[in-house]
Image 1 (cartoon, rainbow over the protein chains, first blue to last red):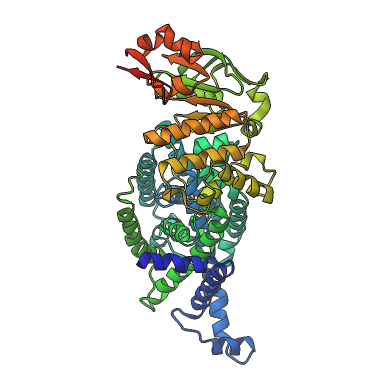
Image 2 (image 1 turned 30 degrees about the horizontal axis):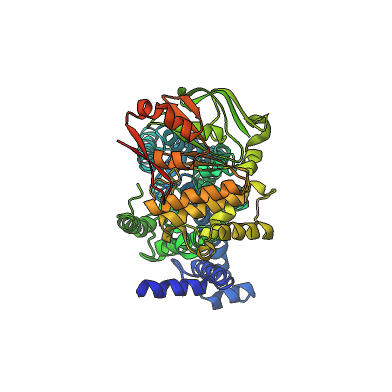
Length: 340
Length: 252
C-alpha cells in the first residue's frame, strides 16, 4: 500500500514541468543557502545594503572571494561526478560501479600527486595529470573485465583492487615527498576550501563540454545498456562508444578531482537516486544527475562549513558519512535479486 | 541470402568453428543443432555479423559483410542472443530501440519509428503490454517483446539463439508457431535449437554441427533416416505419428 502510494505520487511528479521545476528550485535553494550561511551568516538585508552601496561591503567581499568560488566548485564537481558515475554504471552494465569504487578517483589522485611531487609548483600540470590517471584507471578496469569475461562482480573486485593499489601509491608519494602540495588531508578526503575561481576555470569549461557531449550521446548510452550483443546487433560500434563514453566519464571525474580532491560517493549515490525518480532513459537521467549532483554536493559543503562552525570539516567527510550508509542500504536491497 | 565460405571463428585465437561452408535457405526456417560446445552459437554469432571470422568469407546477397558495414547489416538482419540482462524500461521503449539502425545522426526517434514499434507490438499480439516495464513481464511475454524489437528492426533475416530455452512447454510451442508465421511472412530464420524434437518438427532445413565442423545439411526427414542423430548425440531415436498432433520424435 505504502509503495503504491509512493509510485502514484512519483507518477504525478512525472508530468513534464513539475519535476524539472522542483529540481531547479532545489538547486537554487542550495546555492542561496551556500552563499548566505557559513562562518559568518550573511542576511539578505546586508547583501542588499552592500549592493546598493550603503553597507560596509564586507558581505560582498566574502561572497566574491570565498563563497562564490566554492559554490561554483561544488556545483561543477557535484554534477560532473554524478554524470561520470551514471555513464560508468551504464557502460559497464553495473549498478554498483562509480568513479570512487572502480579506481577512477584514486587514479586521478595518484597522477595529480605524482605531478606535484615531480614538478613542484607546476599547477597547470595537475589537471591533465588527473585526467590521464582517471582514464588509465578506467581503461585498466575495463580491460580486466574484458579479459576475464566481464562478470559484473569481477569488474567491481578489479576496481577495488586497483583503487587500493593507487591509494597506496598516493600515500607512498606523500611519504617520500611530503612537500607534494596535493598530499594535504583536504585533498585526500575531498574538499573545496580555499578554491579560487582561477583554479576552477579551465576545468569547468572542459566539464561542461563533456557533460554536453554525454547528453548528446544519450541514445547511444541507452542502446549500450541493453547489453553488448544486442547493441552490436543494432549496428552500434560497441567498442568505440564504450571507449568514448568511459573517456568522457574519466574526463569528468578527473577534472573534478583536480580541484575538489578525492570526493567519493556522489558518483554512486546520485545516479541511483536519479534513476528512482526519472527512470533509466538517459534523456531524463543525465539532466537529473546534473541537477541532483550539483545540489547534493553544494548542500554537503554547506553542512561541512556550518556543522562545527567556526571550524570546518572537509566536504568529503560529510559525503562519506552520508554516502556510506546509503551504499550499505543499496547492498541490502540488491540481495535476493541475484544479479551478480 | 547468407553464405559462409570456409569460415573459421572463435574467441581469443581459439577456433570454435572450423572451415564451415554453407548457405542458409532464404524464406525458410534454418535450424542449427549439435551437442553442447559444438560451436553452433559461435556459428550463429559469426553469421549474424557479431563475431568477425578469423578466416574465410561471410556474404549477404553475394556481398562481403565488411563491404556492407555494421549499420547496413543491422538494417537487413537482426539477432536475438540467448541470455540477456533485463533492461529497466517499458516494452515499447525496447521495441523502439529496434529502430536504432535506421536513424540518421544525431540518433533521435521519429514519429514513424514510434508507429513502426507500435505496429510490431500489435503484430506479436502484445499491444496491451506496451507501457509495462520489462521486469514485470513473464519469460514468454518478454521473448515476444524481443521478437517485436527484431520486427521493428525490419530486416529480412532473423537469427535466434535458443529462443525456447527458459520457456515452459506451452510457450515453447507458441514460440515455434510464431517463427512459422514469420516464415510465412517471408522472413528468413536461422535458429539454434537445443530441443531435437522441435528442431525436426519445425525446420525446413537442418544443419548438424559437431566439434566445430558442419556434419550434415539437408531436410529433417532425411536427417532422421540417415541415423546421424544416433552417432552425434549418442541416443536412440524413434518416431510416432500421433494422428492428432502430427509426427513426434523421441530419443532414449
